[in-house]
Length: 564
Image 1 (cartoon, rainbow, N blue to C red):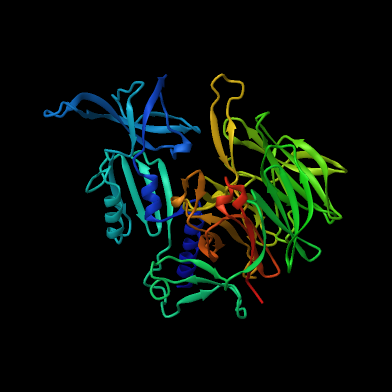
Image 2 (image 1 turned 90 degrees about the vertical axis):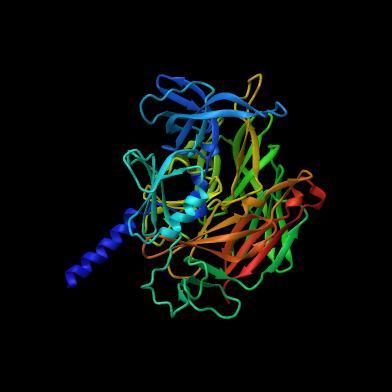
């Protein structure tokens, strides 16, 4: 009997391990990924069909597009008004390669006729069927089918079914009829009936005194009405730590000699403030050569004086570069400028000191290049060398951090792309969030093809770096991420408006999955810096009205106590 118990336990562990690259999701996320997306055929070259939709539009490899041929016009017999055209399905395309603004596809079957200008729609009139491995998900699949009416749902899977949705427990897989995986998801965990529900919470944090942060996984059934496992850290209010009479573009916190310091950028200026009981006290200030600063970070590679790294965009030269300053004796001094990289630091071992600085090349087409190196100091000279670790190709140094989950463990990477947080361990993606992470106000409009008569412009988001810190003192670091309700972003009278922001917290469980929760409350301002020290969470929030109306712009320092 013991042998069977051990085999069962091993099987559970292997199941968790093999499914770690599934994306954590709700049914809303799945519907968003499978919703129709309309485009056109740009060209047909040697059997390859080029579509006018790419990764910017949310296209993924193996996505299925229906080709629609246009027939005769439909006119209103009473008015003669053209109502549209009769469309007929001409075949299906399967995406084979995805670029930023276009993609390649090939016919998914024989006899498909396609030409330049043909209309294409993703996941419309595609035959689809569900496979329920456990037979207990009828309600789930009914809701999914109702929310995806553009698919041609069949009662059961056949050899000709073009899209198959397979659910096995909390894992869901979407494949084509060749078995190629289009999407994989780890659904927000539902607690099964075997869970003992007499206990409403399972504590993952020590019990602090009044005003402390409490970490708990809420168990469905009694303590959590939506049935999701969450990890929430509650704080009781916050202290106003001071304010700045302008809208900061970004900031970064560092504890120096027992006092928290804040580095801030604004337009083309950099400032360093000391956080004191009476507020923010400016101790250093320097103007930079750029017309637009994008990001700022502290770097402390050794025990000596720390450095401040900044990246900016030269609108005249249409190039991105960085500068490194040393902060010593209350002043900033240039160490090296015109560093041809986008730079940002990481606190790898969790001691509060960002000891490594990564440098990513600027790509004129997509902004963030695929080559990432490491900055090192050689005396008073800054050099680059090959980064000794491994990073995913989609990693971005701004909006990204490299860290160890615990002392002695391998390095992990957490980074934000497209308002989603991705976590990778050992070259495997183990978590991908819903589209609610980031939301920084630091953006840049850059020229993709300088020198062209009709240049193309694009926008890049410069996100605030996630923070990896052990907030509940259990020896494992959690990931803290500025988050925003992106569905309510709007532009009114030239000023950006946002409904709410908050700080998400991701905790890794013993099974290798991640629980998502929130630390603190909701805010009506952008979160442009995040840090922790002495049992408190530090946030730099920025009034959105200051983006375009400088006279009314303001930045605030909030200090949230998490322990006595």
